[in-house]
Length: 336
Image (cartoon, rainbow, N blue to C red; front, side, top):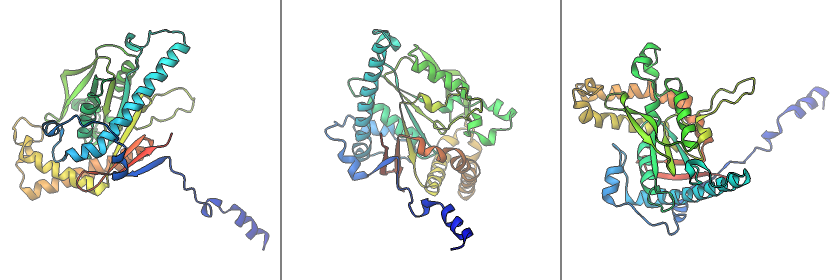
């Protein structure tokens, strides 16, 4: 063999012959995951599910039993472990019982990420309802990061209305300060409220978070990392405050179909109100409305999914993979 050929054979990456098969996740079929429910009791009834389900997001007793009860059992164990670790650290630091809130508990924060129309809000409400029924953490709050969007007037001034939901459209500093206050156990912290009816942040409305046992934070870009500084100084990520993170996943074309279905449903309901921001879409013919929904999905939401949301999937602790009818078909849990 010539010297050049020998050198090239050495330089060829060995990974081609020894491809890495390692995955940071352990994957479960739905049936395998459902068995992990063990003896966790079902604490919701059909009436509860009707109130928790979203537009065009079906929610059945079976879905809760097979997917969300095992998940809340796991989360309950994580919460207990985190509280014990916090107590141990507090004793090590010689602080006695003077932990956050004066009760020796550190709020457990769950981040929930995923695309527009993938069912994040429904999942967040189900988790809140189920977790609040566990006896050792009855206070469970829910905050959506939509409230931390910049107001429309500011988005318009910056030319960002067509990038609403992209990372640059959020008041990230305010969100970080809010999460820092929650983690510090400060009382009566306020978070802004977003109205999908008005398509804007409501300046005169807030939600109060007062030292919860668990806080669920739901949003598009909650797993988005910050740009790392060259000087090495600390720049916090939103996910730095999470004790556990969940990503709701589905094929992009399937989510797009769900988006269009939701849009058409809203066209027949909320959009009919003359005061609604999107009232103009209620006047469109059905084929025009469907074409409009597809264009909004393609030009804004699909782009945001591909550029910003989907790349954060592998940063989550748990991935819920959905099928065509919104049912979770596969669960991936990050290995410890």
